[in-house]
Structures are given as C-alpha cells and as structure tokens.
Image 1 (cartoon, rainbow, N blue to C red):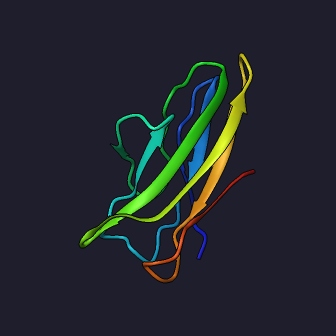
Image 2: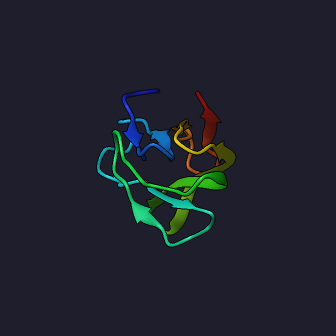
Image 3: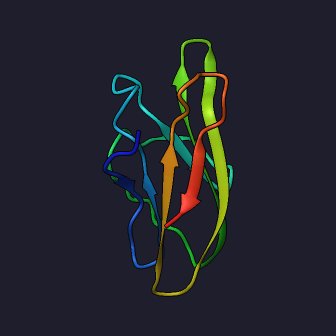
Length: 102
C-alpha cells in the first residue's frame, strides 16, 4: 500500500510520501506544527519550513471523519538540509495511519 510521494521540499523542508491508493478520490491534508491544514493530494508536495524541530501531521478527510488515519511525527531539520517523511493511510477508516522518517 505504498506509492510515490508528495514532498515538501526546500533546502530546509520536510518530504512527505503519501500512498496513491486506496483513496485516490480523497485528497490528503497535512499541517506543520499544528498550523492551518493544507490539501496536498497524493504524490509529492513541498512546504518550506525554518530550521528546527517541527511536528508533521497528515490525514485524509473521509465522509464524516475529518481526520481519518491521522498520524504525526516530530522531525528536526538543520540549516540547509531537508527531511523526508513517509505517510501510509490505514486499511480501515478507524485505524491510525503510519508515518515515519526515511
């Protein structure tokens, strides 16, 4: 259930890999440090961040569930570097997604 990725990319950024299935019609959302949600879609997305430790959260809005498969991870980005984060949506809507650094 893994797929190509959506990446937040910049010299100081997080890269988030999101699966292209099973919910290709549903658009995943992500936030950095519990900020405003951003619709990132499936694949690779970029979002610039300042150096430091940031909390990356990813989820998929699904029917009456606003945050199906929500998962979060703290990632530290040094000056001039980036961080890759991979997210996998759950097989069942009531389970948490999986998120990790790569």
